Length: 235
Image (tube, rainbow, N blue to C red; front, side, top):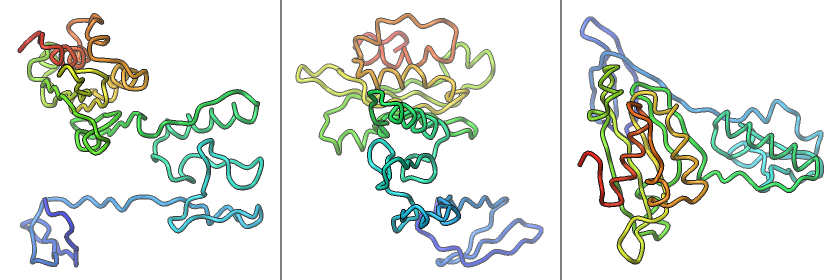
């Protein structure tokens, strides 16, 4: 992995693709380009509504997606929030409730579910270890691999793991669940338990009480949490 490297060009031959970089060159089989996305607020003629964008091209909004103009909201890719379809849906639902005069809570962007549809899949919600420490938490971490999961072995997809990050209490035990991170088969379908645990501020002891169906991929989350109680099911 070469981070912070400038690509100067490339050429293709029978050996593969030669990538010219600022420190020399490297030969690879394939090249994948990911340049990111930007909001196309400039196509909306926002000046007609007396609205402007910030230096990154986003429309500034408050916690309830309200712009500076009364009655005008912005959601989804137009604002500086996680560029996820389900987050945009949540923002839109919040806006409709606000318009209808209902009591609403802002979207907690630090706890939204993330799903990456690569192979193996990646899914996570809540804080990473580094983020938890930066927030001042003392933490306990538990990891369990799919290599020991019965359903994963049945379908022949045993690469990956589940990691649960919990706050360390004054007694030295695992308390509130702060983050759930998954890599492996169908983990985008399995994050629900972890997402709910984080957003309901559930503790390890509370979640460990729940029975997990067997054999399932999702039971690995339960086992990872159970290990934080000091009574691991499979070591």
